Amino acid sequence: MEPFYYNRMDKERQAVYRAMQQGLLSLADSFQIPRIDGHALSDIFFELRLDHPEIFWVSSFKYRYFADSPNLIFIPEYLFEKSKIKDHQKAMKARVEKLARPAAKLSELEKEKYIHDFICENIHYDKLKKPYSHEIIGPLTQGVGVCEGIAKAVKLLCDELGIWCIVALSEANPEKGIKYRHAWNVVRIDGTYYHLDATFDNTLSKDDTIRYDYVNLADKQIFRDHEPVIWKVPACTDNDHFYYREKKVSWTTMDEVRNRTRQAVKKNKILLFHWRGGYLTKEVLKELLDVFHEEAKAKEKQAYVSVNWPQAVLRVRFKEGVGEELLEMEEADDSVKD
Image 1 (cartoon, rainbow, N blue to C red):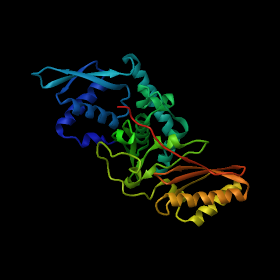
Image 2: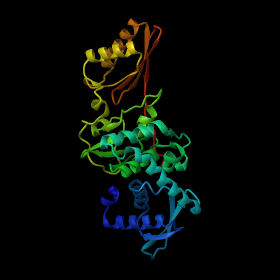
Image 3: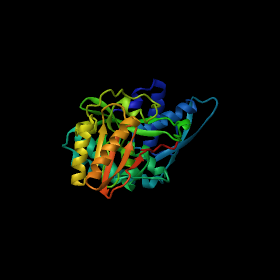
Image 4: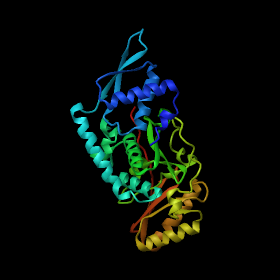
């Protein structure tokens, strides 16, 4: 698929990128690349691995140079012994082909959902942030990952299934308590660009309920709780394929919420929906909570409410018993430790 970040580099950086890619693919202990400053070198190393998540066996590097030389000596630090890398490559190729096979004949939208659901159902967040969790080998072979590894895995599976996809990366913001960078994806579905954050949905999914709060968001939605990107990505201005709108669970009136709540209480089902009837203010949330409580109380049940405030998504469970409704503010979070 398109080497997105490479295509946006100047010729000097592209030359470094190509030399670096060739050296990493050959599993060289060290190799020469055109000389460039250290900050640019780090950026190129990162961007190369976002363009090519299939290069999963290297996580960092060192370099040295001589004052009168036009080149640098690039020294990659491999995650595995070189003798084992080719075995890992072969196993990864077979794994990706096997995962992609059931979705080969689906539409682009269905393929995207298939990949998203695989991540939410099979990958666990690696709290220890092991080095391989930042690469595709963590999510796709070990069942663990952090946002970087998950976003790379999404891209690799999208590439395999013919969906245009890149990895987006935002900077840390210590003032907001955001210690690390965060990675997610931008996909092109039916010719239109959307944000897709399978990691955030993974952290929210529980009780056998897969969340789709971050499937096909526009810029104005995603940046409610994501920092600006480090490297520019295509503008996402459309939200027609936003999952909850597609599934008609994006509601605009209290009457509709009340009717759906009544049905959920009666059938003892979890109520999961997106509020689209204006801003989710404290006043609007209180009105929604009153609806949940009243409908639950009528059937001698209690409402347990979880709210993803930035994305205006609410999840309500109903249990036997009457009392005060319980409210939880959800926080989807996972970041790249740089």
